[in-house]
Length: 173
Image (cartoon, rainbow, N blue to C red; front, side, top):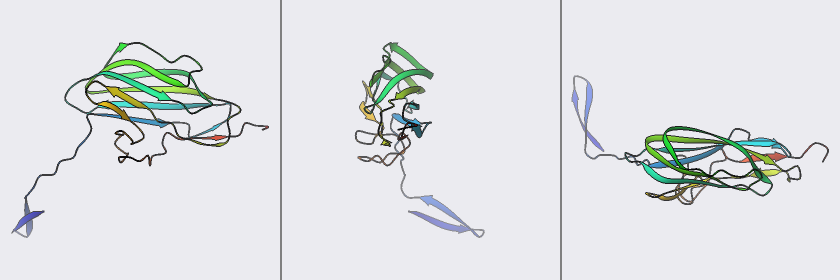
């Protein structure tokens, strides 16, 4: 609450308490740029990590277990104030993707754009797919809200559908 005093027709307020907004030191968010894909097609995801904190996050690893029928095809990386300290990449056809080890400095970010193949035999439906990261300082954080979450995810929930892909039947099936 605040108390105020009228001064020349205006209200002057003085705070009685401070408000603090907590922003996790590191956030991860996974989104798709292809929310609808035909079976046999390619889905594209962006996995973005941002270090909002004042200190570096070290030994950062990123893991992404794809739904059955989704397999790794390729990826690209964009980084700002981040360094790759260990190089491992998913193998083509893999369903459990890891992207090496990183140090993400204060105010640094890392975006991994991933292309995945969707099997022609995939059943129609909506497929949820989240990613997680682990750091020395914070432990595990994921995009589905169960461990921590991104800025849009309340704890213990995944109201976001921005990483969901709707698979449509392949032509002729």
